[in-house]
Image (tube, rainbow, N blue to C red; front, side, top):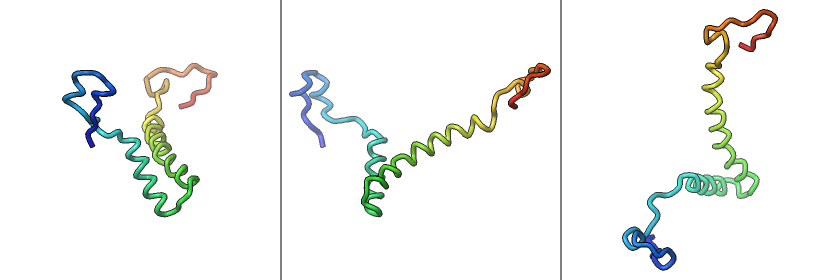
Length: 88
């Protein structure tokens, strides 16, 4: 739905382009989660839990590659001094 933005923003570019270029993905995802969760269990607590699941999954997904290949003195070819514990 195109809106006339030239009355609010007096710029030449708004006379040609009168709408947002692309929809933001995060609010669209939150709206989809809300519709799905509210259809099953209408409650704010369940919606709050459902919104946190993608964030937790992204954090776990970003943490796993760092866990598989940790940098350390033995992996980099260095020598661990005597008497010092190594975490690798």
